[in-house]
Image (cartoon, rainbow, N blue to C red; front, side, top):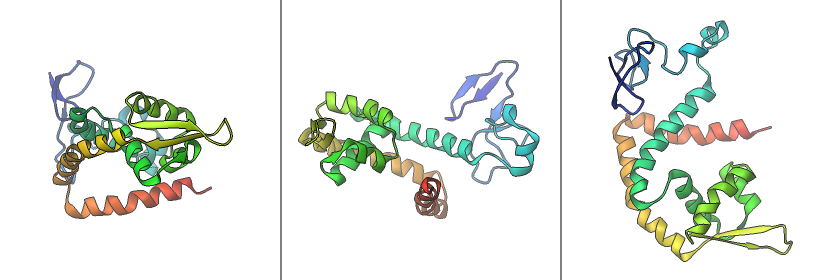
Length: 191
């Protein structure tokens, strides 16, 4: 039995997994629905009486969308030796200048451990520099000249990813998402 994975690639299915196809009921024709069912592929095992009445979990839907979009951007950026997470950090540092690592974590919504893990390959590559601040515990992070050059090199790949994403969705949806998602992040961060 053949299936289509979440990237649209044909794969073999096991007997216990139903065939995945592009859903005819989906407004945008997106893959990821079970054939003959209106349930999304990621929800069948998690569906409960509560989710039937309140709908899908916003967090799960956003995470799935984020992973799919990241895969598309990573595919383009891989050609220049970057990942979306790395490009994002380099771009933030270009705008922020030299910044305390703790403040960079706030700007990127990354916890300290994740930020440190994501900065390590950028430092090793020479694209980011880190030094101690006035207080030895304080770490100051900045983009290097090599990091600026890497950003310039990555721009065409990022533009191709943007164009690919834009071509796959209606223009109004693209604009709505770009306006809505920053508001959603602010609402979620409000305590």
